[in-house]
Length: 339
Image 1 (cartoon, one colour):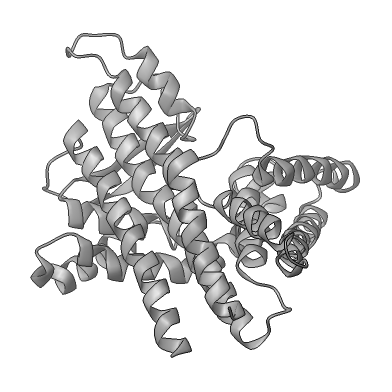
Image 2 (cartoon, rainbow, N blue to C red; image 1 turned 120 degrees about the vertical axis):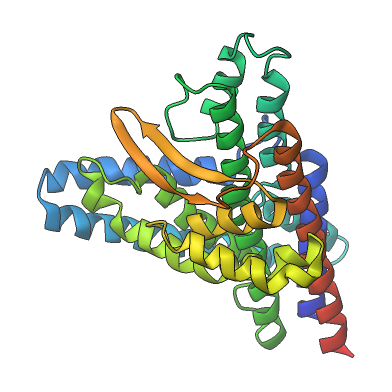
């Protein structure tokens, strides 16, 4: 089997494994390791830089230069297990597949959002605290004062935005890694690129805030994450309408999503949510609170129904269909290239 075909099969196996087991709580997750390194490096940089913006920017860039290539190198080293002599090669395949699955979050995202929906009370005057607690585990906004409508909107928004960050962007970079293997079998492949992306994403989630020292310390990681997510986000915008009929509205939905999403300060987050809003038929956006800070996000899909349990489930189901489309495209493309 050539390296390119091996890469596509590993990606397919990883996606299936992710759907089956998600992120097992008893296993050490690579993102946890990345987070530990970020905390250690941040502590050292802040001790050296103090409150000096230029030093903090330089230190943030240094953290990025250490973590992202370091994660890629770790992935490349794990990939070397594939070339173990028989019969140990099967062990290498299993380890690489499991490692690739760790870069995907389809099952964990679905389970987390469904946990919020299942915790909602059956009546309008019921206790919302269980749902607020479960939502607080997966979003950065203040959830304590959200009513049921706010909880449902937040669940829909995190399901749509994190589908790109947690599923489709890693899949995209895995696919690029499989293509690289076709020309250079001994070079970095799907796992190296997937872990490099996860490192940048973890940097953004931990340091990419515009408060305190992080305004300067997190700049490099946030910009790199924006760059690595830019193309996967646009591919989601182009392909999500293909799994959400009627297909005759493909161009209209893409153009409306671009119009609505462009109003968001993030080059990717607003567009991710906007394409789901127009494909599912749900209004997203509005006021969010982050502690004492009030943020007005652009309204996406204005005039469409506000979030409800059914529509949030539709967002999750659409992501599942789109993942199937992407994986099928990977396999068919590989077959066409190798014929």
